[in-house]
Amino acid sequence: MAPPHQAPKRHKRNLPPEAKSVTKPAFKLAEVRITTLRPAFAKSLEQLQQICFPTLADSELLHETHFLRHCELFPEGNFVALVGSEVVGLGAGFLIDFDFDNPDHSFTEIMDHGYFSHHDPAGDYYYGADISVHPNYRKRGIGRLLYEARQGLVKRLNRKGIVAGGVLPGFAHYKHIMSANAYVRDVVARRIYDPTLSFQLKHGFKVRGVLRDYIVDSAADNWASLIVWDNPDYRPLG
Image (cartoon, rainbow, N blue to C red; front, side):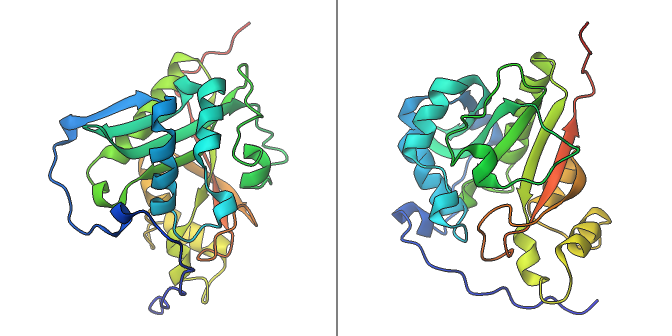
């Protein structure tokens, strides 16, 4: 395979000062606390979005007003990772009946512009709206804890599983030499490593397809994967 092309230049956004930190803080995973969403976290979570997703359009990011609305709708389904009092990770989502026969959708559409207004308390699936960890805290196990919190919720609520559109950050290096479909196939086959999709596959997700124009992401030309985690403990009712 030809060597990957250099990723395109990303548009710049004025980031909070903590985004420029390059020193990895020392901490133990046991110090990480996973809790549910509260209004007090809303502003810090907005800053976390800006830090974690520098290539996304601002309209695709979740802001303080969105998080305050999520607190009203489904706080028990939105998880925050803390190290001490610092917000370092997020696992956001809501319940929905997902139509796998007509799976094409956009991030903005299904999220109702970030407000999660399509949340259905009786929905069969948890829709994974966002999972993110501050760059200074990545590769330490926090993402795994957030995924486990989501999966635990789905099991407790006896829902069928988790569905999500997954960003493809690594596609920026390959989009000039292959299609998004081919890229995802190679990631699934472990011929290519993608920082997001490879992690999701490791944690039990399966790819159901790709989503065109899912999210305004200049690096990945708006492509995303459609992924599903099936709840092994699901018990049909009735």
